[in-house]
Image (cartoon, rainbow, N blue to C red; front, top):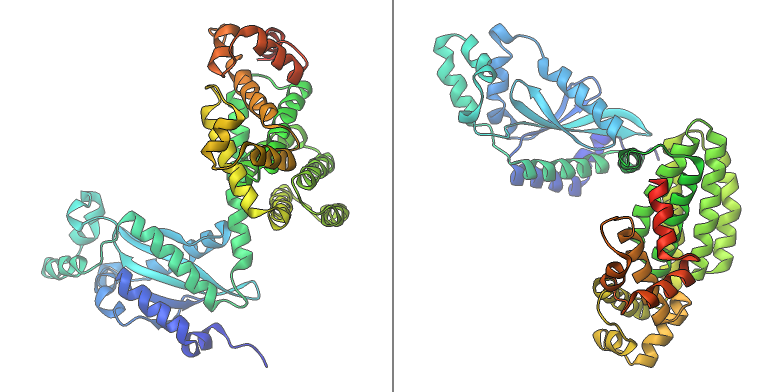
Length: 432
């Protein structure tokens, strides 16, 4: 049987009708369903009362359908950005627009309008031109109609926009998942663009060597986050890594894909070390090459990487002991906050209500290193950031990050970084 059209769904799906009525009742914003040509297929009962102002300014001197043009422009913006659009309808009147799709084709739109974001008394003189142009005998009626338009706060408008998008999703066939992917891609591209801008704000000319070093540092950080189960933190670093790769290979898409593949292999290896099943990871790796071959643009590539990354980390959480993970996270959060203080296994264990032997076992089994080594690693990472400051002496930095003296600090630093703090500082300042 052929699936019902969005018009029939509006009539037959009681849940949609209930949600629409709830939207109008709670937001107090009139709602209409228009077809792709702008013709009204359905409108809420309150539209007649609230639309008197719109009808007035569109009559006489204002003949025409200026709102129809704004609806069309808004729905195209919605398709472009993958989200509901809050914009001006005409003059100072606001609208929220979300598209209705069938088989990926625009067949209609939900329009929530009219409403105001500010009280009419706060409108600027130039915004009141429509009132000043009408005949004097109609001015009072127009002002009265204006006062009946609902005033919606900014946050309420944003919430209403999300609810409207959900209604449009239910009316669409099959749904707005394709549009949601557009939104995800736009958000991701925005984050990567921010990271690229941050790189440029460092005010230095990047060479292949300096970018490789920066990539290596971030790569170590994301592997640590993955092993700790910090998906949000790892995803943030992933955006930084993608930015570094794009800066290097933006002009060569094939090299860009090869670099992405190398990154994913590193991340899959980290996922296995963190507890993901090796069989699952090998299967995913095999699919990387095939899927990469079909990708033709940067936006799709970056979105695909994030989706693959989420699958990798999901595999970790499915196999990892959830209870151990929560205890581990609390312990590591405590170390992250108190690394500058004297820390012992006993003190950390008391903070997470475990015996020292149990905590040591969890740390070793989940991270592959001892608790003492992990504390030293955190302290050295904090020290590396401080060594970029010329004003701080090495002995000051040692005390700042929790080492009892400069000699022991230097010994541990050299063991982890294969160079002394002094040489590390010189290299950092030279490349800055």
